[in-house]
Length: 343
Image 1 (tube, helix red, strand yellow):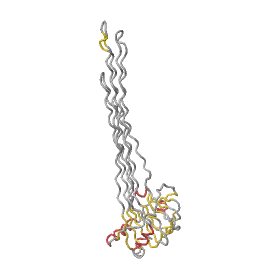
Image 2 (cartoon, one colour):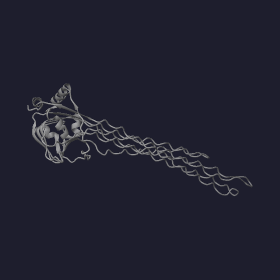
Image 3 (tube, helix red, strand yellow):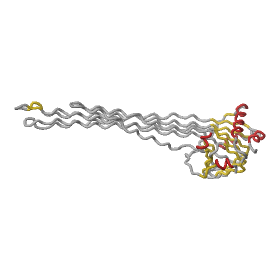
Image 4 (cartoon, helix red, strand yellow):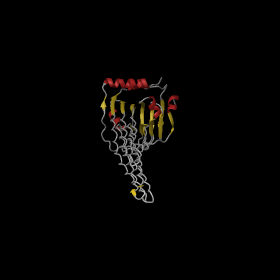
């Protein structure tokens, strides 16, 4: 095996893949490339080839990560249910991926395998960002202040944007592997911040007496402030855009090969709206005034607990991604020979 490609293929690694139903896709829409676009695609492949010699046979079994962005072989064989995944390391080098093969074979038509890219699944929901500040404490004979409103929740992470994949192939007997370059789902928005607690109520006046009578009884404490409103939920992360598939194959086979690949290039689902934050707790009531004996007996009662603040409003669902594109072009055996590097 060529040293560069041998290094690019990682060890067999089990990766998390989203399950997909392919039976629902019955029509594949594609755009036929004009001569200028086809020439540009061929030149891109020529410029991207970075190996000294092609591999003879590459066999894909299980879930296989590939760390390079350019894979060339005489024959690529997909075992039943296998997956060839261009890794994050490959995407860090280039977002345009290339696969050049004289023949692609799927051994199991019922479970033909998949060509895809590594993307994050089940993005974590951001944590709730603490609590807003407490309201102002009431001074003597003053109610507590309302707690401050909570901040908006953290926005969800954006879904992965799918790469562009160019496949050049001459022969594909039987079924072909499924091409899955859909965008990655956006992450859900985080919960809004909890509203601040209400401030504590101020104390009531003490009782007052003179030499012979109680002038004024002890005053009750003042109520605590209302809790602050919860923050609105965070925005959902946008769904990732679908990828672009370019298929170059012999003129008599290009449309047939496209049907065999059953490409998936749709945009992903956006993340859900974050829930509103809870309202802050009501502040405690202030202490009642002291009595003044012997004439003013009995202290004032503690002030009432402030009401809980209202919950925040939910955030907004993330924006939808943009569906990808499929381009096809016929390529002659002679043109393929110029792409297929053997020097």
